[in-house]
Image 1 (spheres, rainbow, N blue to C red):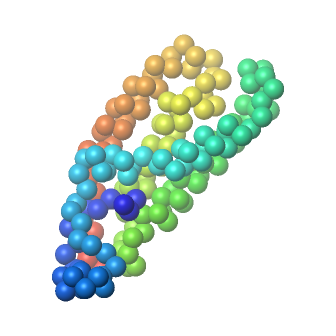
Image 2 (image 1 turned 60 degrees about the vertical axis):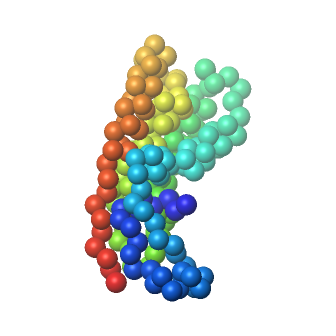
Length: 157
């Protein structure tokens, strides 16, 4: 499955080429709500973030300011990496326009997910008493983001 949200059926595939196995793509239907929900969540970037932050040694994470700073730096690096990554993985076919709405929604979704996971936010004094806010934000943010259907791009061919 492609990471790019399919906005309209692919209609420019030669049926004869499909039968002979010569086509490099098969007809697809537009993505439904669940497909968009999964494609808007930058799961690979979240996995990258979790992997690198779990590899950072911490002697005492509640008092070690270097550890907190490292978590914020890693968070910043992955925030910057998210739109770059999404730009490249959403390119399906040559000449297809960039689907900026998907890149933007995924780039906003990443910090929301880290906020819900805790990340460096868990060491902020207000977060400990109000971490339930993260659950509300991620629930509503994910629910409403997937309602957005990108516009169909004009066929570049």
